[in-house]
Image (cartoon, rainbow, N blue to C red; front, side):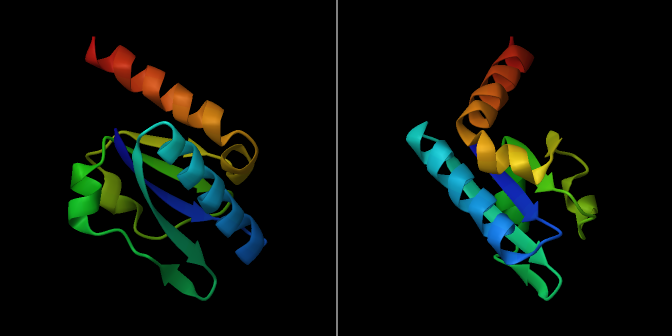
Length: 106
């Protein structure tokens, strides 16, 4: 499974990058690929490419604030979660996504 994420948090750097780090680790441990874009007041880092979005099975938006570029995901399965879910329960999040995608393909 391959998924992309946009991480953005009102408090800025610490929570945004913590959520990114934890989700990357959880996805890799499960054998999945995750590519994460971060958005902050000073701009976007690691902006997702059109190909990365197209190739993704699911898009995760882990944010407590409005993000830019939401229209890029209009044809994708999008899961919106608060940032604290990605920080505190990344393994459960990956497991839930896996179950949801498996159920959708049956």
